[in-house]
Length: 448
Image 1 (spheres, rainbow, N blue to C red):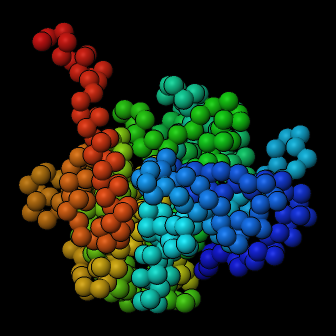
Image 2 (cartoon, one colour):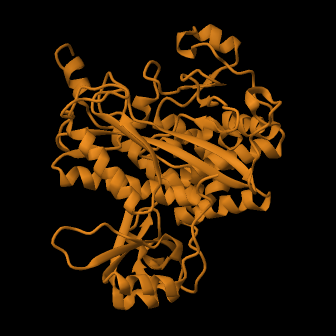
């Protein structure tokens, strides 16, 4: 099984590598509740002290972190995330980065830190003997600039378009990610014009959440360097596919894939089926975490390969959960794929609620409904009702209302993140609700 967690990099090792590579600055990275990457830099002279005690900063200006009267925070670098950044042209020094855990003064973990939230949920899995592995597939678009949706190509799925600038962009992005220690399996053109995907190698969820944050930054930075714009907006163009983040996932006990059973249906173990059942049951409640923006719900509509119905199957890509084909000799690759999340989510929170839902299914011994191999999009509402196929929330407002009532999500996120997230999203919905759109002007102004 590839990717069994981070190597144990010691403080002494980091200081030695920094000296040998002429590191002048270290970027300390962390994430707010919305999944926005934050950073501040320290000089090499501060590195040893930062590794020992962390670096203080004002948390009151970070979304979802703290009020003015309790704003002091400490960013403690995680030594296992130390990585040299690719050199810039004409620079004679090196820059490194580390992800940080956020602490309160005194050293206690800050409950509003999304990385801490994921660690807390991973510990629950670990206490049951499990390691949680994930492999997200992040889709994105290249546009000519940040002010329009003019693409760079008219290609389709897996197309190789001659003289396509995006081929060079993807190649440079892959090289940069690999230089930063992130394993890459595939890169290809996606289904929509100017839409692309680079797939990272399956690994443990904490490593992957850090990698997702790095991936999004690298994709955007490489695009900027070439004078174009990359976006992870879920649905930037009407009438074509949006961008998803299909998340492949499994639980391991040591080196054994707990999802595999040679005699099980689809080669899934009873434990895997219960995990699927948990995801299906709690899918509506966790949707606002996996799809946290107004725009996310423009993607979750029938007809564009994005799931909006709560079902599962083996081959059917209209389902919420898909079971990739089993190949003999690849037992460790047995997994399930949740297709609803989008690439603009907070990966720490997304992985947390998925795991919480799956573990709840295992804890309660849930059984999933019968898989649906027919195209759910083509069924009538009556047929779906007769089959017991429910739907995901159709707007951020609907999704937040469901999340607000969810004991599972509140427990998974903790009170601080849960309340701050709900509050932020209610404000976003209200701002959207009162906005007068171009659609309304075009449709109503001439007739009313």
